[in-house]
Length: 157
Image 1 (cartoon, helix red, strand yellow):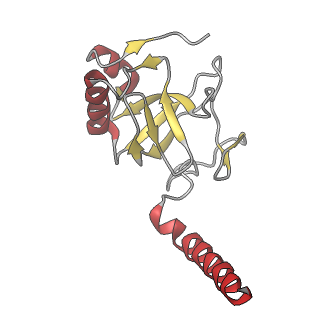
Image 2 (spheres, helix red, strand yellow):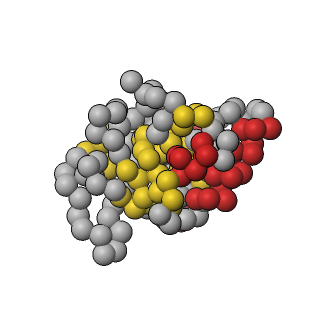
């Protein structure tokens, strides 16, 4: 009995170590660290599940989109999600919500985007997502979603 418990514990430890070792290969590095050729940001720290992210919220920052989650949210790493500021898309359980997600995927997934934060509005929403105006190739993604009728404009107070 004690031998089987020991084997189980050792197996779990080994599984954890292997998972930790390969974590970097499966997920992108810290997305808010400066890109090559980008100056070091002013020091503003925001707690994240992955680390403390440092950047100047008064300036646009460039990040690579890892995965689109729905019509108003996308991930830039395993832990960090961005929500389109002042935009509300339909639920994914509806056909309109699925279309909004597909459009957003085509617009930004696997691309480098710029995030613009609005100092007068909280940096994170109640779900912990960073809220930003998103730009790709000079196009305001937030406005484009509303213009195409795939999302509604909403005001955050």
